[in-house]
Image (cartoon, rainbow, N blue to C red):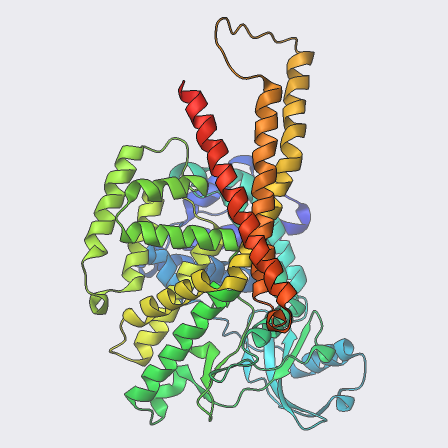
Length: 555
């Protein structure tokens, strides 16, 4: 693969930094097609040689600039792919960089506002209160008197990041050895990082995340989400309400007793599981610098750039995995992982089952107050790497977030126990199971899925028959006796139709029964009761038909 000449100097810079920090073998792989031209390959100096792989990688990313700092931060969430040495070092990557010129920042602000700055802000801090790789933050006050913070994107950062991503995508074809040696698909990983980086370049995504979290906790007496001023937010500009409180990273400077700290942790854990279990949408970076304690005791979250999403199906898989682990049911765990397409086809199931059993038994009888979620998940991720198990990235991000939450909690309160996280999980798990409205929603979704199967399966069968007919395929079944296709389809469609009708009656009757108008009209009450009676009759009929079919098969 030949590189684009417009990126040639950057290729050489990347290659030089990699060689400097002892990653010359990667440059050799890249240079098999003269990717970066001639690069001087000299051994790293003694101080670099004494560093661990993670330390050398972190320093290399820091030297390569904003794109690679962000890439390092993304990689630090993939505990399923990389060892702890690398993860822990890359987790230390922070966006503390030199601020860019204030006059440039104000020019960008004016351009994005499309009006004079004084028309929107009556005050802006002279110096940025924080500077990151993608943007920097100023304190401000709106003309309506509300305090705010302004995040302004660095000039030219979009071109820099897109250029670096383009380079990585071009190099991905020469990084196939990662797949062979470490089971890491470089192309897929780079594609995933590209999506996340491009989103971080658009502050409107972060604004939407903040607005959605605000809706989740709108009525909460314990959690506060600052308002996003959407009228002034653009792709390169984010304006939001300023949070006045104590940052958790500075809590030791204040006189806060253990009882208050424990209350803060309880709020944080409960709010996290509410986001995950109820909404499927969660703040994925709950480190101390992103959490504030307000004067009224509320917990406030800031920085909505890293958000996790988890759909209902994946959440059900997660719940099933946890329950199966609790029951020590290794076969069930393997079946669930297979359903998730997490296990490769060449895996040795017996070795997998054996190692899984050891893993479960090692932690099963340890008291909750002695457990560390970080240790358990580290062991789980190591197990996954050894057996080439690839979970959905949303579950990996969820695991990383739980580890961050535990670390934040232990740093705040030394006697923190995993029991609070376990209790919060069980609470929301039970609520989910007992929530009639949510269950009805799931049932409706299942009915829709069954109905889709009902109307598509006959067409698929017809397609198969057409293929058989076109290929002139003849089946010699000899004396083998089987019901005709027409009869099988008739039985199938009858049972599916009855199942859909049964589900519809149950859902409809339940909704009528839950209606606030049921006490006002006897007719409505009788209709709902009739619906349940019809459902009972259809259910009994279905059971009879299935038993009859099984009996006939056994003959």
